[in-house]
Image (cartoon, rainbow, N blue to C red; front, side, top):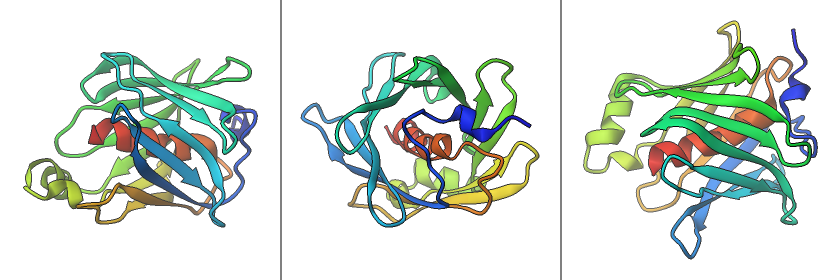
Length: 199
């Protein structure tokens, strides 16, 4: 088994099991801004979802504004497609986030860049919740909830949102086993998923 650390940005070593991801607002161009914090509330990184036609990008910086990594669309059709996570310091490609287009369930996979082997999967709860978010008048207020599984399909955590009809989305990430997954990629993935599927 490959060590999860090889899939992490070099300047971000996440060892905890609880994180908060929040959309904190929008910039002057109305692009969504996000922040990830650790269990004591310290900022790990920030990003702004830069939306361009087929060239969506997320530049991640630390609390001081120093570049950490970036996620960039490499193959998209609407919300389906592949997004590449690259270390800003080494220019090394770390993982690919891929998404299957489905009305019934949102499924994102974190894969090895070279052989596309599965590292982890993030899957939304059942079809009724997904359809409700898409089609009910107040559907966007229904909180997302995702299960995180490892390469063997074993549950190793969750991403749970709060009801957010008038506020920006906020998620609590809880990991029960961090030994076999790239923790940083999971936290980064939570931001990418919310931004792509919410905008």
